[in-house]
Image 1 (cartoon, rainbow, N blue to C red):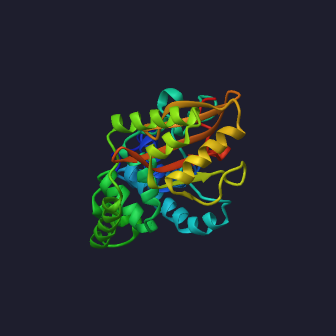
Image 2 (image 1 turned 120 degrees about the horizontal axis):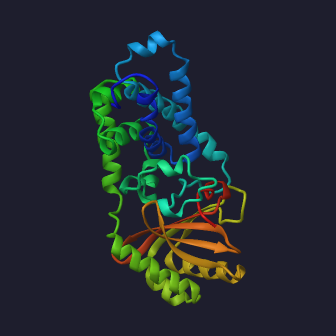
Image 3 (image 1 turned 30 degrees about the horizontal axis):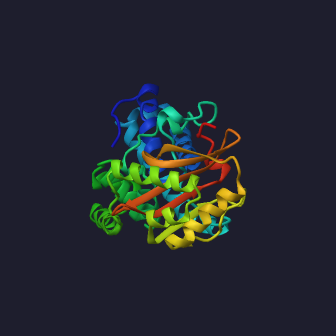
Length: 297
C-alpha cells in the first residue's frame, strides 16, 4: 500500500493518492485535505529513527489517513443531523474549469473517474464507515485486505466481508447511462429549463425522479427532496422565474455531464444528474457557497 522508500520525496509523492483516497472516503474536499494534513503531521512528528524503520512511508501514510477518515465518518452522522437541509458531497469541476485562485489544491489533485460521480458518492454515503473504508480501499484502489486490516484493525476476512457488503449496495444502485446519452439528456433539460417548458421537462424526468438540494443553511434551497417529475419540473420553472438573468452552462460535474447555473458571473448552483432509460432519475443541486469554491465564476 503506497510507495516504498524513505525521505521527504517518498512521502511528498504520496499526497495526490492520499487526497484521492480521502475524498472518496469523505465526500468533502476540505475534510479530505484536513485528513491528509493530519497524516503528514503525524509522520513528521515521528523521531527520525522511527521514520527510518518504516519500509513504506506511503503504506504508513495511507493507513493513518484511512484511520483519520474512519474517525471522521464515525462522527459524520451527528454532524449531518445538525446540517441545515440535505448534505451532498462536494461537486468537482473538470481540471480545465477550476478556479485556480481558490480550488487548485486539493481539487486539482483529483482523478475524475466513475468512483467520484455524484451517484457513486451518494451510494457510498449509505454505507457504514467500516464498509466504506473497506470497499473504497479494495474495490476502487485495489489495496489487499491484509493491508486494509491494518486500517480498520480487523481481520482480513472481516474486511473482505465489509467490502462485499459495500459492493452489494453499489450493485443494487441503478446503472448510470452512457456519457453520450447523459450529455444528450442534460442538454435537452437545459433547453427546456431555459424555455420554462414544463411539459418538456416532465417528459425528460422519470415520474419517480427525486431532486435533492444542498444549501447548507447559507443560501435558499429546498430543505427536503422534491419527489416526482411533475413537481420537479414546476419547481425548476419557479426557480427560473425568481432568478432573472440566470445562465445555464453545460459542464462536467464529477466527471460526467451536468449543469452550472451562473448569475452575474458567479456560480450559484452546480447540478449533477443520474440518467436511466433516457430520463433523469435523480438531480443533486449543490448551492452551498463553501462547496462551490473550486468552480470558476
